[in-house]
Amino acid sequence: MNSHLQLIQNKIVTLTEAVSLSLEWKKNGDVVFTNGCFDILHSGHLHYLSSAADLGHKLIIGLNSDNSIANLKGKNRPFIKESDRLLMLASLAFVDAVVLFEQDTPIQLIESISPDILVKGGDYTEENIVGHQIVKKNGGKVISLQFLEGYSTTNFIEKIKHGKN
Image (cartoon, rainbow, N blue to C red):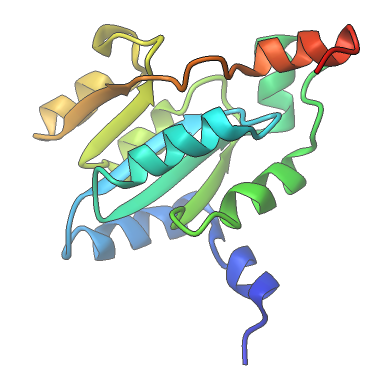
């Protein structure tokens, strides 16, 4: 019998496994892909990710590695190490797979997985979403979802720095 932790850990996959799962899942519906750092997981992320999952049959998340985040956001980031972020995201019921990537962008993941639907947050226009051309060329959709008002990792970091609730 599998423990809950084993079931969660089974959702943390390599790129090769993500490609294989995507091919299998596409037989039954759309595969949705999104990516991010998810350094401090908060309600805004949960709202965004659950909305992304609602767009298709299965949700795959590309997660920036610790090195990737440090390159993008500075040497003081991430706050939460990649193994913990992987586990937190994989613990969400509506997440089907999480795959770590080392690059600054998820372009290799998007090219390999070839999702039916590519999703990013409301601060992105379609033209700014990495991989939009690949997904569109393959007949897929690119969607920008609205953020939950008042929830931003940057705002949480500022509140923590200044000791505010």
